[in-house]
Image (cartoon, rainbow, N blue to C red; front, side, top):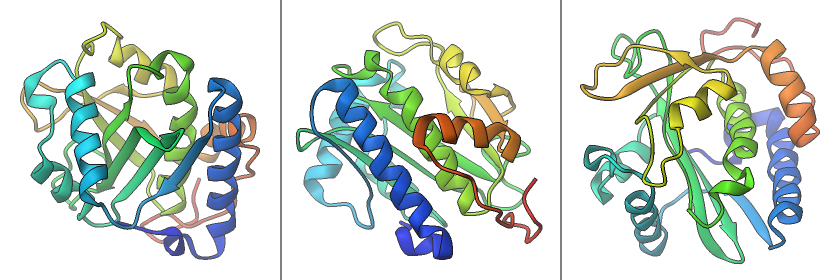
Length: 215
């Protein structure tokens, strides 16, 4: 799992974004919110993540085991973003770099594998606001072509495909049978207004994972 040191000179940008979003979510839900990039995964946190997996996802194939989660967060350039509300884990997101030539979603270089907010807080707009932070994390690591897989609806009937479309994702193709694939190209034109509006962050110039200056 990556830590803040992964971002080098851009570490202050990520630190500011984590703090700014936590403050906004605190005002939104009326409870203390803390956001952090985890560098390790302890058993209580993993157990709560498994509880949230079962709470949210309707398709049994989409509910991860402890082994599934550990495999994901131990992958190359994996991040694990934890959302705590009143000192209880109420959400998380994790993703990892795709293996060259073997992407989960065709034409992508990074896979956001899971993004979860507990049922108690999912209607507060927490997931939408946290998406900008996830985009920033992936972008500052140098990745541009992001894929996700999802199911049409979760156990509450929330339309997940519609949620991702509102964020700018379009339909994609996946190697996973039965999953709905979506992808997005992270560009400065897409991210700068979003990050400025949600996090008060100006996007710095940064090279892509291929070593070229980002568009």
